[in-house]
Image (cartoon, rainbow over all chains, first blue to last red; front, side):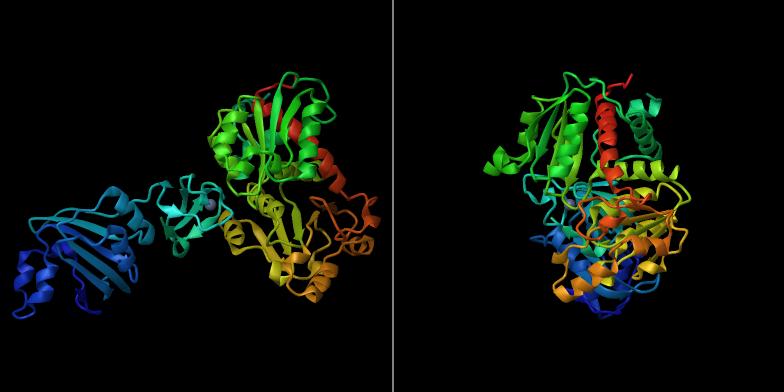
Length: 174
Length: 310
Ligand SMILES: [Zn+2]
């Protein structure tokens, strides 16, 4: 289910079972808002949630809630994803950080946030990004791709081989 | 050899980005000691010279450097004779060739090929040009020539003229000059302006620069004019090319208007962007660049191989 734009964007850390009783009849929205087990990825750059979901893959079971263009308390718009019964791997976090360096991850167990963190970009990114330069030696499938983070905000990475700089909007995931 | 120069032993020379300002200066200082130096200190050393893409001038320059120091070369000047043409991976070719030589020189049309070669070999690898990316000995010889002609690498007014969009030589020299404190003038037709990522780098490094289309916007106290060829194939409309070609052509009359103290550089080959009547002009440095190329390459090869001149 996709929450409608402009709906109340809550901080996952402040959510708990109590949230399910905050309103009498809005149970579908509320029900998915409170996670028993899973991951909440908040403060995603607006418009990136579907790309993030592509990175994570849609699980066979467990609800996935996506909020698009929600109003952020910090101003502007953001996306949010809640996934039931799924924790993210460090490699997935790294990929998501490339799309949205200021995202926050909350790992929920038994309705409690057991861990909340922001991703840190590694200095070297191996085999996550495709170099878009057709004349780059890494366009040969036998060569693993490697990028160096040249600047974190706004994100700029440089191909280890052809040395082309890519801005965030040019980054293509493998 | 200085201690910094000693640190360069066993290193690869792939990209100017890999070196600090002090390391660049160590290359240039060592190169000065190789001016007119011709003793067989490379005797018994073999340079594997792999030109997957032909480049006659670079090939000749490196071969001359090795032979002047008594070394020998093996390899190929054209990829059609190599087994890569039969589908062998670059890494495999390098692993084979490293058994035959002491240092590897590679020229390749793919960007990053030299980096990949260096990662596949324990020998020092020198990049002799990888596509539009890097050609570090060209940049070193340009720096060497600037210092030779002006006596310093700081506090200069340096103009780049012509094709600033596609010229690898210009991009690499401009970026390397950000290690030093100079004022940069960028003169080009609008369609061949320098890509914005280089301007961002100049901004980030605090280098003062300006852009203009008009050659005569240059002030008369400019120290260096570095001009490049504008290639006809960059212009879909031949009439546009004709206009641009003549707007950036430099001859004696132009130089008299700009100033006769100016050092005039060009990576060669030239077509008509510098008139031949300038060849005897005292500031004409383009043939010195070719000569300095051999000097710098002698020094680079010996430093990476750990051969002391004395
Ligand atoms: Zn690349």
